[in-house]
Image (spheres, rainbow, N blue to C red):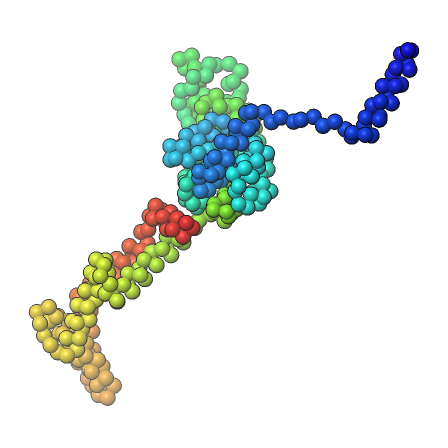
Length: 359
């Protein structure tokens, strides 16, 4: 059989096979490594009550490793997983509202798993600041200063770089010394390759890495980053006001708790002393209050009399209104102290309050 005839027959048979059975589909096997990653991530999703997604774009490896160690020391797991594998883990773990999470998975991310509420985690992440090298193209937000002193740089072509940034130098002991402090960048300037190189050689890290959270997932709820910003002073003030109000109500009701009873007894004593003063009943404890009340009434009466008899103004003019009794002053002082106490709510108490509010 001629070769061209054989080729024609093969072509016709392939066309017939395609029409009868359709295109052949190869079986796609997922690599074992990816299967293991999905399994591990799904297990983390089941184990921890919440997770947060951090932006990894432009994050140096050194600073990321340092951040991971800080968080892991607090029992928080940080894992870098590709978005596609994380999607599979979400579905495998049966996470509620998973589709809403998947929509937000873009670019390179790190996933933080924790058994705390999202607001606690955000407060914790906000406290992390790690020094880092000057990235080329980054805008400067504050002055970058080169301090005076010895460097370990040998004299050579690098001396022209110092001159470019107007850094006064001297050569002593075979190395370059910076003679005087110099400002090499001001707010709004952009870090050039030359500046980045010089700062790196001098070991100066003028920038700080702060973890950037994209969103958090807590108990089925997706919380954007902007909603996680906590007004610490505002919440502290609200909590303090709530504590003060609750204590005042408890004191009025004389609830049998030490904090309320102490205040209730003090208020009862003040009211009893005032009532005794009104009735003119004198005891060693309320003598000052009774006399003060009597003087106050006498002064009020004298003021009324001067309206009818103007000549009395010369006599009454030198009379001063009595000062508040010491018990009243003490009460006002204690009320002020209570006002101060309600402002002194610590961040730890704030986090506990948020934990109670959000489960």
